[in-house]
Image 1 (tube, helix red, strand yellow):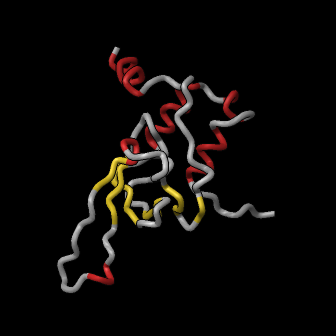
Image 2: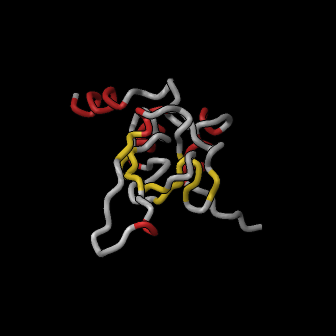
Image 3: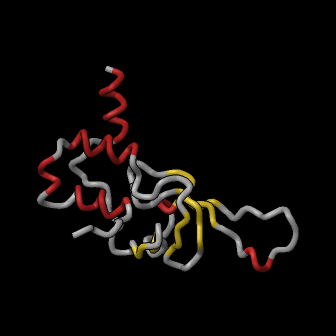
Length: 130
């Protein structure tokens, strides 16, 4: 039977949980998180407070807490110049504010923390330059 599509965050979370986690080298998982963020830049997401936002960048230490730009309420705006909403670094916000929906999926239960056993991003960079 054909599997339904799943969001990127689901695939990454699956790889970071047992039994799959033990199958991968931590450096490979670290590199994967660096190039395949759970929420890709350009993705439209809905936050836990029901605001919509566009993912602007990811945070390597907090993969599921990206930097987003809020989408203002366009219904209340007139004219051709659409205002830009404020940018939020979710890693610096309360834990009560998180990505709740992405790619048409409820992802509120799929968000994960970066596993402590993975090398820190600055360790990976220094290893490459050595």
